[in-house]
Length: 178
Length: 183
Image (tube, rainbow over all chains, first blue to last red; front, side, top):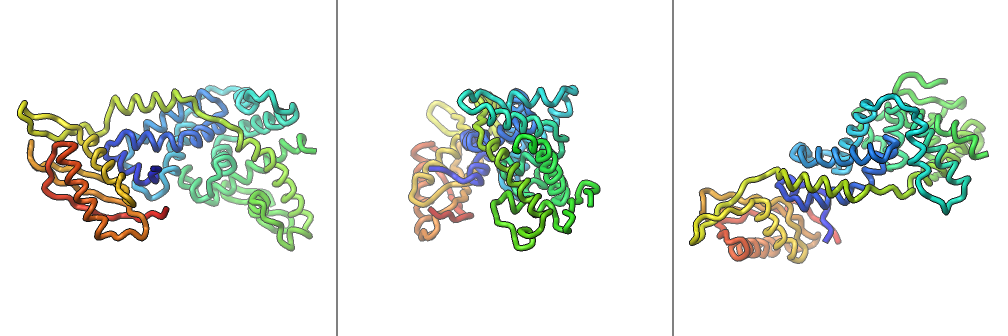
């Protein structure tokens, strides 16, 4: 029997560890994908996911169900990613993104790999605030309203950031698609 | 017009909101009449659709967390339970302690096993050590279920499970149906 998120959250709030585990298992892949794309680094993404899940357990009483549980979790993991980015010493963003985008895929054609790697680098080259909004929209598939809740900025600002990110990425990718 | 400030969206030369054109292209919705005949909209639409091909490939790339992340989170969670409180059970050998979350999980499982019922909150209050307890339960029921009959069965089930499985006789069981679900 698969229980809905709200039922699992209420149980977890009352100390049911298994209910919390079911929630974590259900959402971890999507949260991790977001963390990988925001940080551009697998190890940092793992840390961010782990810290966000522990944040969730510790602060579960603060979840009131105003937004979906997944939205709340996206906020926790995004906050952890942004904190990691701020801690990070300045490194060439292109190097940080390359290994994620081009991860082991020997079967694919070289051109596909190169194009995807180029997109990965271009995403890492975006300013942090643009990248966070763009990843939540284009890779996690969230709506503008949810992204505004997650990032704590107005919806009009979210739309502006996503659009600016798209225009930048399109400019970089134009070379690959002619 | 160039974008100004955090919230401003660039307008195309024809006056259309560039982000709206882009959203439409990405959602796969066909261009409207203006967009079909306007060179600026056509260009923006084509650029959005082109980028979307690569973005879609990135979005579906399998990127999964290693199992070690969840394992280590659950290890920490189990080592530091949020609610460490216990119920006290009388026994011939002296008082026994039973973790309240574990007791609640047993009662919820008994309700979950019933047709069309899912337990949500389950609070067990014991007025004093070793006494009978009171249970306050919220449930979600399958849409169309006879709620009066179903809650009566839930009450019986919870009374029985608490006494027979946990060894905690109950004084009262309050049940509130807080949600309906459809199969």
